[in-house]
Length: 218
Image 1 (cartoon, rainbow, N blue to C red):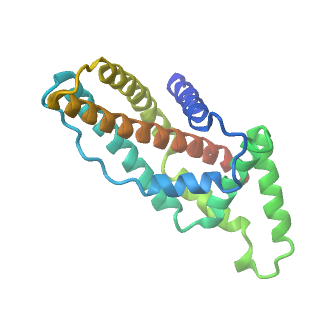
Image 2: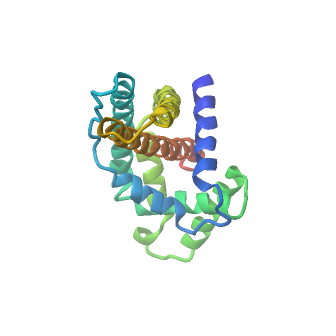
């Protein structure tokens, strides 16, 4: 439970960093983030033989990235052909971020809106809610509770590694080729770490929500 609590705090922290300065979110914010993270390439190992500490951080961050990338691919595999489910989650995100609704109220509203709209649809095959339920069941089959526990220490380690790498980068002085090379390497590590953090934050929110959505999928 402590690990899940830490993961929730991590997700909130990253969300604040990512959205800082934004006064509004688009209606399809979650959908765009899903598409961006789903397209992230497999990791390339960032090695920096000229600096042992930097090299160690590069290896660690690449491992964290590969972990997050694998989980994201699993999530995409369970959802990419379930657009009704993704729309359901996207609308929840909109009401939470744009309308400042509490998440339980936002979820209840989206469920009601979909079910009310389905009442106007005669063809059972065209109804949306059953398709949403399929997505809820598919994502819960990923064992989200277990995934959240696995993600928590990786998320914390990634944030620490990125912070340590930034400190190292700031300590480099001079413009000789070796120093410039280390600076470039550090920048790559930091970028990979930020991608990892954003991916884990996204998955944390999605997995937490799909666990809660099981209540409506009975």
